[in-house]
Image (tube, rainbow, N blue to C red; front, side, top):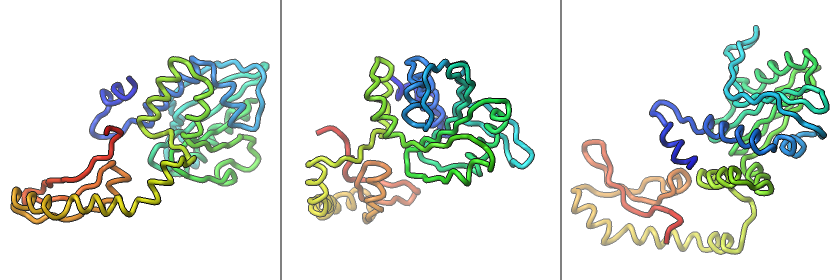
Length: 259
């Protein structure tokens, strides 16, 4: 369902998947009452009686004097713990890295909340490894807590908090590969040990008679693209036949979960 809705919302000039994922995650945190456990799991503070006051996504903060741009954290959450006010910013990244001093700008805006008596927190969630140093983000004298999380950790955490909505979200995370496990099973080890043989077999299938037929049909010789880059980015392993009108005929393997 989430995947179908995302494709409906896609447009040609910008990939909205990060914003879309943020909206779903905000709904999960608010509707399923998971913010309390989320904070206790991924921050150094331990909350007792959390009460959500506000969850806002894509809120714009006007640039401060030393900022070049306005700031728009993916999620802003205001909550209280035994009457003590807290403000949390969450930034979500799937493929791209941090923007121009993006996290530092967010921390500067949190400093304003801190001066108003709030405890402040900044959480950076990424799909890829993107290490950050707290000293480069939090200004001297500020008490904002900073934490980094990978999306596969969120996936594993949510598996212990199943509900109808969470199950749908987990399924969607699997489809967009946010569940990548770092635990190798015997089948993985076997595949790695035989990877070279599998590559030779696929190469053999695409050469010889197959290559001759494609060359004959399209009147041009065939060549290799970067096969391993294709595997990583497009789940395919192919040769190509370049055409005069800047199009290509690709032939090879698509890697799917089907037989």
